[in-house]
Length: 429
Image 1 (cartoon, rainbow, N blue to C red):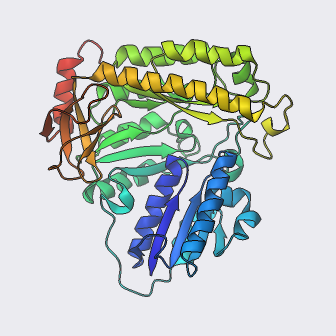
Image 2: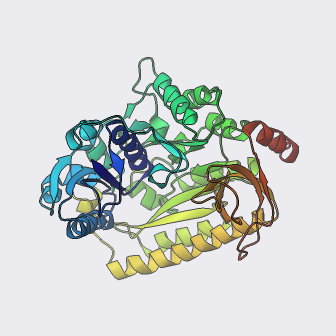
Image 3: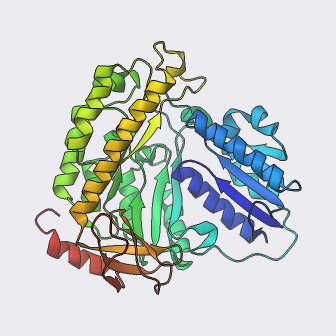
C-alpha cells in the first residue's frame, strides 16, 4: 500500500504527521508522492480562512491528478467542518483530531511485512518534532483551536523521554518540542508537572540530541525556561513568543493575558542575556476595531524591539469565536495594506539580525541534500556541496546578500558547544 501525507499548519500538526509516518511504515506502507499514492492523508489547519481554502484546493488537486486515490482528511479544518470536508472529491473518511491516533488502522490494512523504521530524511524531515501536549484552555477571542483541539492534555514525561530515546537511536540529532499550548504542559498530569520539569528530564537523556522549543505564550516563558536555554548546550537559543499586537487595547480585545510592557520586558531580558538568540513573534493585523492609533503602536514598537523575525497574519473571522461577532470589522484592502507594512518591518528585523551575526561562528545541522544549514539560532545558510544531510557543523555566518558560508567545520557536538558558549558568552550565561 502506497501512502502520502500532506500537512498544513503548525508544528503540532507536523508532529502528528511524523507519528502517522511511523505508524504507516510499521504497517508496511510505502511512502509515495500524492499523485501516485493509494491513500492520501491531508492533515488540515483552520487557523485562518486561507488555511481552509488551501486544504480544499489541495484535496481537489489530488483528486484531479490521482482519481483512484482514497483521501482521508484530518486536522483542525476537518474537525471543525467535517461535513464540508467530507463532501470534497475522493474524501472517503474524515478523522477528527481526537481520533487521529486511530487513523493508520482506519486507512491501511496491515497485510504485509513491517516496513522500515523512520529515519532522518523521511517526509523531508531532518529534525524530528515531538508533540508534548495538545489542546488549549485559553480563550483568545479570535481563536477556534480550543474547539478543534479540546482541553489541554499532556503526554507523560517518561513517555516523551522514551520518544526522544527512540528517535535519537534512529539517527535524529535535533528534536523540536511542540504543543498547542506548550506552556501549560503538565498541569493536567497527576502528579502535576511543568514545562521546566519536562525540559530538565530531556536534558538528562544521554544521546547526541539537541532541542528546539516551539512556540510559547509570553506568560509561559518563565525565568526557569530562559535559564535552561541560557545555561544548557542541549537547548538551542531560539524563542518564538507571539505578541499578536502592540496596542494594549487590542490585546485586551483579543483576550491576551499580558500587556506590551510585560512583553517588552520579557524579550529585552532574553536579548540582554542571550544576544545571539533568535526571537520570533506572530502579529495579527486588522482585528475588529483596530484603529489607526492601534496599528501605529505596532509600527512604533517593532523596529526598536529585539525581535529577529515576525509572522504576520491577516485577521480572519472564525465562526463560533467571540471576535467573529464583534462590530467594526476592518476592510480587506486596509488589512492587506497594514499587513504589507508589518512584513516590511519584519524583513528589516530579519536583515538586522542576520547582519549582527555576520562573521560569527555558529553550530548548526545540515538539511536537504547537505547544502543547507540551520544554525542553533535559526539562521539558514547555504554551504558548498560535500557534506551529508544530518551532519553537525560549525559555519561562519556570511553577510547579508552573500550566497554561501565561507567556512564549514564538521562535528559540533553538544559538549563542544558548551565549551564554546562558556568562552564566548561567559558574562551573559
